Structure formats: structure tokens, C-alpha cells
Length: 192
Image (cartoon, rainbow, N blue to C red; front, side, top):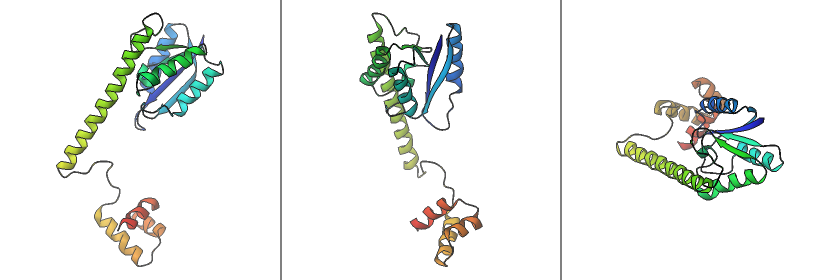
């Protein structure tokens, strides 16, 4: 049977490779071929994700009979209601959902309980991750550090760019001289 698969990671730096390999292997073991891939690089805390929206639309159009996901939390991490909504919508349109890593069958009499528990656990994991990030940020800032990506321009470069700008040089010319993107130079001199 031709099937589809949905993969999701939370950040641009992550890849879908591990999930895709596991899904292809699981589908093959069940005699399925994954014909269509839906993917997102966005948090599972929001339901507004282009890949998920396309999967749901295709299911509503009757184009999806079986959908594979690595784990249920790849669909959503926003809680029981959203997870049940997505699963119920897919099922209502004749789509069977298979997870390969959760270790539970999402069909049968206990399916609703399993879905609720897995959804709750995914939301709690997302909350715990956010708490750890907030604690790490507070610690770094308390120690006098800076949170976030490293700055492209150091203080010396910012001062030089500001001085050149005061002399009438264009942002583009300053950027070319310093070897830094014009948008970065523009933001830096605007703050000075």
C-alpha cells in the first residue's frame, strides 16, 4: 500500500534524517511504501504548521489511507485536545495513523487512553524543556553572560561603522568595507 509519513523537528539546525530512516524501515516491514512526505521544522506547541496542514487537507480530500509518524509527539505537543483532534480528523477521513517509536497500537478499545497519556506526556516534556531553557538563560545572564547567538559585529566594529556612517558613508559601503552583511551593519548603527 502507498502510505504517507509526517516528520517534524523543532529547529532549523535539526534534520529529519533519523525519523525518515525509521519510518521507511517500519513501512517496508509492514509492506507499505511511503509515497508522500510531509515535514515541518517548527515547534509542536502550535498547530499552525504547513506540513501538518497539508497532511490534514489531503486526508480530508481522501488522499491518505495510512500515515506514519515517528512518535505521536511529532504531530503535536500542545496537549490532549489537539492530539485527539488531529487523530480523530485523520481517522474520520479513513486514515490509519501508525507510530513507530511509541510502542503502542493507536487502534482498539484502549486507544483513547493511550492517546491521552502520550499527549499529556508530550506536553509535559515540552513544558520541562522550556523550564530548563529558562533556567539556563537565567544562570548565563546572572553570571554576566549573554544569551543567544553570538554577535556578528564586536564593539570595535560597531564603533567603526558608526563613525563611518557619521562621515556620510552609506550602510552598503560600510558593509563592503567591513565584510559584514548590510542588514547587520544597518541594525548596529541604528542602535548607536
